[in-house]
Image 1 (cartoon, helix red, strand yellow):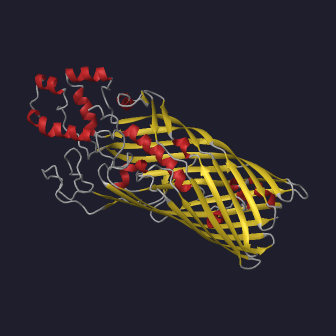
Image 2 (tube, helix red, strand yellow):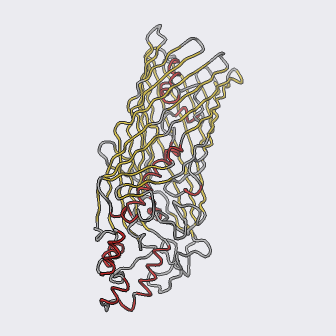
Image 3 (cartoon, one colour):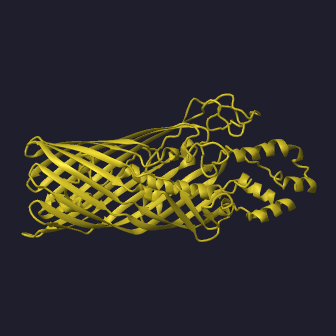
Length: 554
């Protein structure tokens, strides 16, 4: 019984925080520069035009005179989610989960007699959070995510300094689904984005072989979530058993004695069910200015070989926003029943339980969040006069997301319950342990100069997940991934270049029942979030990116 009010708020905050961070892993560098995509993001030693602001500011010294760079990136997210019941599936003896059970709702048996082979909860459309309007917009089925970017650079005649700024999106991702989708218990609608709208940069050519550079990024960060909530937990199963077996003889004819003995929990019209919906939650948090900086070095001792190094600083943020919860009837009635009995009131007072749970709760929430630091180094080498290979190795400090804390503008009734179960909770704060990892990643790219005007590019980047195996889930539909890129570059004249690029990222994940504490873990200790407890879960994510870049010199 202690677990019950620990429902929408705490669990949805885990969804909000964990999903935003893991989507950063998924979307890293997918919407910054299309030429980089085609080279497996192995461009530290050969940064692409004004996008060197992000990849290696030292590369800006390659740009002479006044240059502008405009590109449009179109990304389509195809996310498939599948659920199935393993042999022996049950939650405290109950297996009639309507999500995967074919039995009629009025079937008196607690055990499912006919399971669905599999249930699909695929993402149905892309979603975007509109900056400053603080509103999430569904783009409709078949509509991709658009990310236009642009920049300008200037190298005064005869000067060793180059100045630049660019607007780009280090991270843009979002998806949504209609009501009734099986995947809605881990996000009916999600939108995550980081937009760098200003990046003043400077690069200095030390000599013909060595350049250094620095940039300051001023970014907008946002995350928004709308989700259904349910808690197929053993303790909820106990309450269903009490309601259906112990309380049945007293329904409609309870008295003071039974109320005292049973703490009033039988005085409800709707009992608890581990497969029932507990509520709906909406959360959004933003920060309008999130500063960071990049430092770069580029060394080219010969025409055939070059080395690049970049350091991207962490960005420490204080996100602020709002939450709103629509509480379902069953948990509200349980707390009301508890407080209808003298013994229940005493128990509630001892445990500091709330006396009432409203149908709707709302308030302000904030959290400290660090966008992690990143270090990457790479080389470029011409193995043939017309064929260049780039290889990069990078590391991102995702361990910075080992845990983070949500803070509220008022005491929250749900947290009053949660603090009895965890040292990470107070009346108005919640610390979430995530245990992210900091893997190394590499990428490789090839560029072939077919003619003086035409260049062909291909790249590959295998991405090792920073998400531990026991934290995988359907809201972050990725574990390990592979990024492939193909591109064509064409020079119309000495001042104008156009690039056409195609990128494809894929990731498949299999989460067997009882293996992830943020998805399908069973047992009495899965106290926070496991909407698919006991079920097998599979995801299949495909991201297709098409981009067009136009660069000109004035």
